[in-house]
Amino acid sequence: MLTLTVVLFVVATAVAWKRLAPLHPAQLWLTAWSLALGLFALQLLPYKSLADKTLVLIVIASAAFVGAACLASRMTRTQRTAAGARQVEWAAGALLVVALVGCALFVVQAVVNVGIRDALLTSPTVRQAVQAGEYALTIKYVYVALAAAAMCGVAAGLLPARRGRWLIAAGMAVACIYFATGRATVVVAGVAAAVGFLVAADVRLSLRRVLVGAIAAGLLSLTVFSVMGQIIGKTYENSDLVTVRSFFTEHPSAELLATPYMYATAPIGALNVLVRNPPADRSDGCAMLSAVCSALSWAGVQTRPLRPVRPFTADPIAWNTYTALDDVIRDIGTPGVPVVFAALGLLCGWLWACARGGHPEAMAVYAVMSTAIVTSAGSNSFAAAHVLGAVTFVLVSLAAAMVLAARRR
Image 1 (cartoon, rainbow, N blue to C red):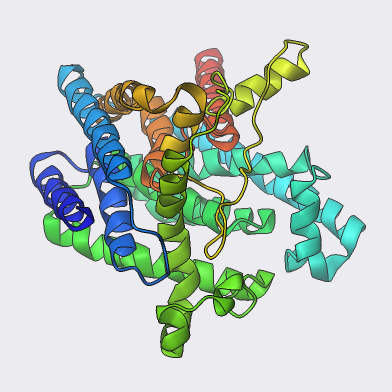
Image 2: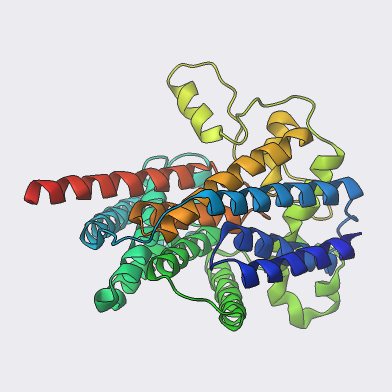
């Protein structure tokens, strides 16, 4: 059944890229899940076979999201208008400055705490301190950096005469996230910048360009994971994978691909475990809306926010992200999965249509939200703190830029 499901997703992905305008939410979702399921089907690591219930749930959730996104994008009537390029530039510049200053403060704090070498190489000491909350304030610069990456990408798309400088600015916003110790976050910020640029520039993407771009993006992501893995010590040789008999232990020449393969496929295996053994207690919305519940709890409202870091699955492949379906299952159970993802599809389809209509705020917000769609086969980021924070900074910066422009007039 897995093979049939992979074929279904690949065909649906090809149809979506052929029939829909570029970077539609349906295209991003289907591409991400086709890749993850296709790689999982190779069984290069000793995963358990996917249960039919897991596959059916994936198909239903995907159909709900894709169908709703297509419906929303068709029903949203908007014409492409002249976007406020000057306001976008002001907002992008302000966000970049704040992000770089925030990054500098984070690095200074790390240098004071652990020394310059550990701070610049993002050693395990720094990573553990971040997880323990010792950098709870300064680490928030990542939210601004993600917003800056998206906004600088939009600025590059809207302003061909200054495209080079804004692409460099987007690259700076993406690169500064390195110090936050998350390889995946660097890739995510790169996706936000690329989507912001492509949507704002209204680039026409042929199937050939899509394939070339996908290959280039894959190679770039692999490079980021490999290089940063070497720097921060997260390598195949230092992982538990060396103790698990698999394709990679039998073919040492492919060891470089082992960790990226695990990142792409382990969430599918973890979802299978979750579907087989769902939690006994429901979290009543505080799994998917953990950031909101944490804020309410801090304000004195009685809530039970779940930690973003979930328990690990059992050996031989221990993992602790369970695809985007995870939080919904924990909150309201499997029956609620299609309802929630239909709602998310409507939201993303509407945002995409508004972005195509030339609204700069929609372009930047969709660029940020697209990262949740692209990573949906790995984790649920639709309401993650960094996504909600980045969206907030995008909207606030644009609102401030428009107020400033109005006062100048």
